[in-house]
Amino acid sequence: MKRVALIGATGSIGKQALEIIGAHPELELVAAASGSQDIDGLAPLTQVGGDLTELLEQAQPDVVLNAVVGFAGLPATLWALERGVTLALANKESLVAAGDLALSARERGGGLLLPVDSEHSAAFQCLEGRALETVESLVLTASGGPFRGRTREELEGVTRADALAHPTWQMGPKITVDSATLANKGLELIEAHFLFGVPYEQIEVVIHPSSIVHSLVRFRDGAALAHLGYPDMSVPISFALTYPERAATDVPQLDLAAGLTLEFAAPDVETFPLLALARGAGEAGGTHPAVFNAANEVAVAAFLEGRLPFLGIAEVVEATLAAADGAPARDLAELVEADSDARRLASEGVLVS
Ligand SMILES: NC(=O)c1ccc[n+]([C@@H]2O[C@H](COP(=O)([O-])OP(=O)(O)OC[C@H]3O[C@@H](n4cnc5c(N)ncnc54)[C@H](OP(=O)(O)O)[C@@H]3O)[C@@H](O)[C@H]2O)c1
Image: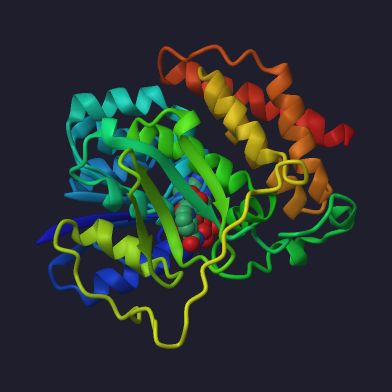
């Protein structure tokens, strides 16, 4: 029996996780949390907003599935890593922002960190049991989002509804906008660096519109291992929750007889500058990734509320990165301060846009 705490239970990942937990008698939901929606009765212990580590402390789960969106997921990530409680991590923003602090907590705790992001779950499986020195590079695939192939001019008037119409994945609004700007792939690049210890120059991003190949790992002998499947988050969620058993899901097997065309292309980093900005922030290190994340959260919220045009998202993030010092955070308090400062700078940037 695995005792699961699900935080972010009302979201896109959270709801799919509830179905998986409900279908597996060996998974027991002991605690659930949301940000604001009522979840009374969903689990023996529930909490709405506030400090979610109180709930985790009370529940003492075997696994924390962190499906909160944004930097708000950080305390739960650190709680699990510090204690060696298995962390099934959908909340990429916490790992991107906390970076080295999260890795130190994992080292102290010694527990499992299982990615739920489909690309990272795929890479985790391709890398499992293989020595890092045999890895030539990691290739993260990106659908390209709803605006793939468009020019900058064609992005000037796009609306919230246009950005939320993702071609292959059904997800919450923040990550859907991140997919449209390619900021999501930028966050994933940094996430992959921290998860797998692969240097940035060995992490590639490739556009793959059908989202069938979730990641590839190239090895030094010229072989590449890929992870394929229909785009359905049930697979990585189930993989993380039932690891290492790899329980069955009801996701259909790939229908190869129906034909399968796999197309790949280089990303357009001129039109979608957030990918290159994320790479720069990752390479710069310190709190630059946290600043990238915070500015992006502020800008995406402003776009979703109609206060910032689509192209303004990258402009606000770029200006915030240029203004922030990005000095490394020695502890959580310094990280939270860097995040708050970046949010203030980004909010000022939104106002003048
Ligand atoms: N959706 C996907 O397919 C997908 C794929 C890969 C990775 N991810 C990652 O998974 C995470 C969740 O994404 P999502 O698409 O499921 O988001 P979502 O649908 O917007 O759901 C977000 C969840 O977080 C909760 N939440 C928001 N603010 C909170 C706070 N301050 N404290 C506690 N809970 C809070 C929400 O509760 P309320 O409903 O009460 O506001 C909701 O349960 C993100 O980091 C995303 O990047 C998602």
